[in-house]
Image (cartoon, rainbow over all chains, first blue to last red; front, side):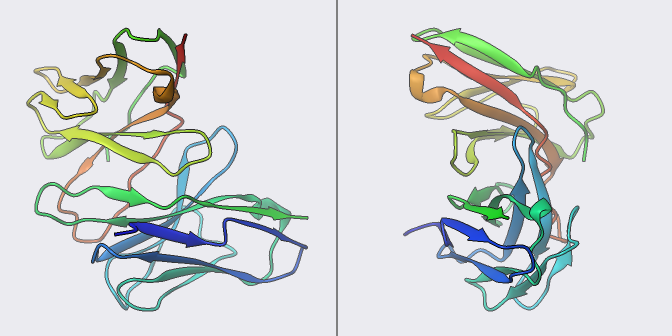
Length: 114
Length: 113
């Protein structure tokens, strides 16, 4: 049971390049999330997926797209990277065990856009 | 979701109890209190949560005041590995729309040798 995994761990892009951040969970969770974290700040929600086949915008969706490929996988795409998207990106999934729901986070992807 | 207020930083001596406060004066009756922590460069880690009763697990204890307007996370014997940013979050459980957890800036706990 690996929990939530993310690839790649690190990435350097030039302005205007595109890339996809991958996330997978093996806990059979319905809900999945993408957050970004800038230095000294808390996490801000980019997009989330309440269930397979659905996605919704979070607090800071501009410049990003997502795909919920199946129940396990939720990818985040930057079509044209900008320096303002330099950040650490965390994927999370949520258990829905009755009232005991909580979120589990991946190790993060560190992205630098030059 | 109710907003929370936490001190930006705290120090604690190794081996002593670390008591991290959180104010959530606008909490609603159906909102839970969650605590997460984030050790440098890692993803946030779930610690504990509760509704109105005090809770304890292998990591920590959560004390919620009777009026539920504040809570305290207690790490009974802090170690150097407990140095992290601690987030207090209040939110409704059983959210049918898959809403997120709102992470504020948290409290940076430094455990000192």
